[in-house]
Image (cartoon, rainbow, N blue to C red; front, side, top):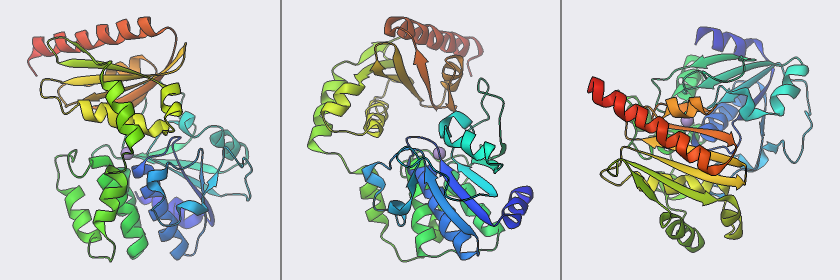
Length: 331
Ligand SMILES: [Mn+2]
């Protein structure tokens, strides 16, 4: 943390970004730092890779961000880039390469474990896996810099924490998430507005899509594991964001017998995005890592090239190994 604050103090022109297909955690942490560092006298720019999903449009400042996909030009020479909620440079490409060749120092601020199967890290990282959200690290950083919180910073940090903990369902074994939010709630903003924007934005089209997707669910290993397949083209046909497929897997994890699940999104015949969830006993991150991806122990994913049936057999085989390992050790 001391090195991180020293880097920030030394920099004048700072760019903030988060992973592709940004979520509430990365965006919240990034926008909180945008307001905090601007108040602190830094020149700050927010550049994200792709456009912000609609459900985050309520966040202050979100419409002023540069979307690199549409506008791939660095408008300034940046001393420092802070990357939130990932430590995988592929998740911010091609911006990563641009910043690197422009001589910008790149720092990842994250709560995901360092990648096992990724490229050798091309930047430096500050990783705290005990944080339930990157927003909590952002909060600590703002405090460490001695910057006072305000309404805008509070709503952004609150968005991070509420999103990644899904309204405190996935807190870690510390009261940190709750304590920080209790402090944030002293500022004047409406927490219900955040909850509704993050969690109650389902459209009729989306519910229709989910009901169709749920029909394709397959159960394995005494209903302990579920597999569900969706098509990217179906999402598009219904006018949905890629982001919308996340709710399908979170929804099926409410099934009592399920220990883990995989959602396979077919982007094209040979390109799939797999998302894994677990209730905690099985480290699905291990499967994601074997497929070349990463994430958290209980929420991970990977982009896979190859045939669907092969991918499915590989996933079932790998989950069976986790089940068998679990039986043996009983832990
Ligand atoms: Mn996160």
